[in-house]
Length: 492
Image 1 (spheres, rainbow, N blue to C red):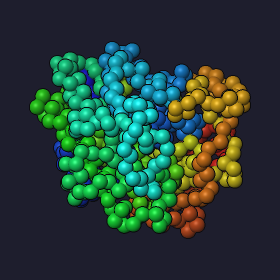
Image 2: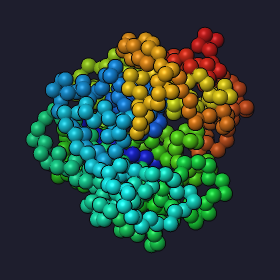
Image 3: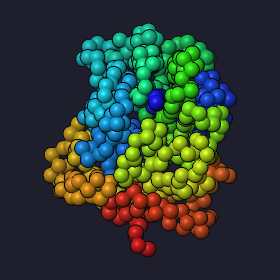
Image 4: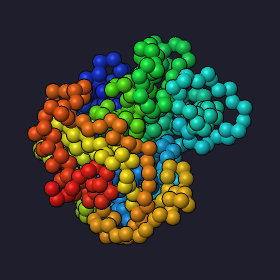
């Protein structure tokens, strides 16, 4: 048995032809439908990048207990489980966050891994040299990473130098060397189409972009009055051009599967961690705004050998379901306490596996959807307190927790979330404050673009969704701080 997971970072559902887009050029994403089941109600769980990857390893929601961080010593990784049952696992990626303080325990779970440098602000090439930086648009993301990115690009002059292209090509090399082997899982993970939206000119030509980019690395925040319509249109085209590049190289893997008849015996999953706002709801980016559909309602395609193809599935599904699916496919026993369910029955029988799913970002809204309605609950305490990190790996993205943070730590014992192991409880603050946006209630069936907030108009649905939210928080062992800051009681 063999399995391939092709993962693209920041792949927004509404930019794919599979989900109704009629202007982004992505024929190979469209081609996935020939052999795959297309999921219409697939959601993320914890935002953004590393919280989502922790869920891909553990099958548990991250955002109620932890912000950005590495895989924990008490976590049980699906990759370790596969290894322990004789499945060879290999990671190929250009996602630089794997190799920083806040992500450095994920790639080591695989039997082997290969990484490519240079994406975004990857601290790769020396940046203390004289660089001819282009004039920055006022909405360009500020900081060291901008300078670092241009230092990295000195090594990425040709298309074949782009790290995501190296990633795909390395994936093809793995398939070539393992075409006659059994019992392996390869994860081919591209950082693109994550910002900055940088592509060779031939992909920009597809969208009539002839001048140097005006803006291709937007700062996260409200959009109101900050971009002209022409600038916003060009920004969206820069993103589309990057999707088209991803599409072209996705096609090379699909060609290989065609040529070697791999559809007969190889599982394929094509997924992402989250999407991105490009002016929708008057926002740019992710993390800062509420988790609208553009961010958390995601594309997902799965091919299971011998099972239905070229069909769609309406069942609710989520990132936490992918590890359970891999275990099920390889006939490896499930991990105790996983929130996710195998997607194989969804593919084969169109079976419902969730009545609702929970999602969020640490310290932000806590959100629940049953596929028809979506409730987004804001914090009730004005300072968004109390809030605590539960961890044995006190690191942020690129640094350790500060002495001040660690001074407040205490050792506590959680339940199934930490497999009964003691962990550090570290009080913390966050720049998230969902109280500024308030609660939302959307009827997704009638209002998929989430333009009409019904929070005050449908009290019965609001009450039902609050009950559902509480049920899912209990199932996820939400810590005491989350109940307090959300103004909720487990017993009422």
